[in-house]
Length: 185
Image (tube, rainbow, N blue to C red; front, side, top):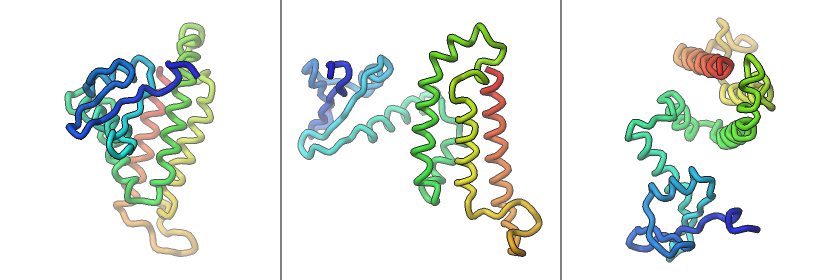
């Protein structure tokens, strides 16, 4: 395994300072963000306990960028993420997000190659149909247990509360808007 393939090890000292083990100097969150943008994997561990703190620091980097107005995540997505922590969808969300980003990464270079030669490069992106199916399956699993918006539920059950139907409509609209934006690219 080459040095570039191994994660860059960052150790957090008790003083909360972050130490780059490759260059033997202290780094900031912005330095870590730059390493990641440059394609390096990083691993941040607590020097004393050995606990992996990578997730905590990556979330902190995202929060700082979002607070500076460098918004990537729409409020609706953030709201749905928070909601997923309290629902049965919690187990589905990480896999869905990981697979979606992996497909995006894999298709990014193909997209750039196809951009000039096809009228709709997203439609020709490898896995685009699979991404759409995955999004639909995600929504279906998120909505499991919610009654359909018909006047009554299955086998004569009471209809879903209006709030649930409205929330389902809002999520479906968000997905349709996202698919529309993707197809326009």
